[in-house]
Image (cartoon, rainbow, N blue to C red):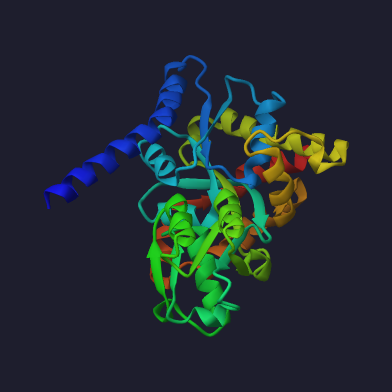
Length: 325
């Protein structure tokens, strides 16, 4: 018991140490309060490159928007929960989960749709999803990867009860997979490349469920009324970037800011960046397309809770998008 207590204390200190740079950066933003920009966070995902390109191109004034990136979703949740963050770019699935915790958010943009970027990878002896019955699979709670696993199993006439789901962080999960502690892993990004390099074989991906996994940009709902000029600047800057990229005519013609250029060249093939036109399509009719995705992903007993805390800011955003076309 004493050893377990010591190990637990060490893990806690390591976690705090790893998160320290994020909180230092965040405190630095808060100390710059006279500028009073929106503080918007994200994790490290290729689909958010356009946001960071917007900042790089200086379409975001320092007084309007400040972007902060961290690989730790828990860190983002905690910062959002205590209102250190004003906005967040993450998956619709995760936003729905956080809304269940009582955080009031409004969707202002759809960033991207995964089209192969989220993958179920298995050891070579496993040839198909059907072969996963009775196997251990590394996944993460309240995340896109867990939704992908559920859909993969359902399509192949299996359920979560037919496998052993082992929940952990993306970093820990890939280590478990490489060490042979689990038979498969659902993952994305850098962990995906590590699993494949370690001999893993993809047996299912978001390409098999096109359009079901999207990432969104949200702000705290109260900001639509208290700081509408900043939220408008957040959207308009992104629009400027879309027009800039359209004029360039080549998605790969700029150096990415969020992930390594070599990784970007690979990952960008497995997502679809959403355009201004796409966003109008998702947000029109009171955000019908987004709500349809939410209904498909949420248990029936959770829909009312999410609906009370998660809004679609269609009335606010659509005029800005149409003006920017």
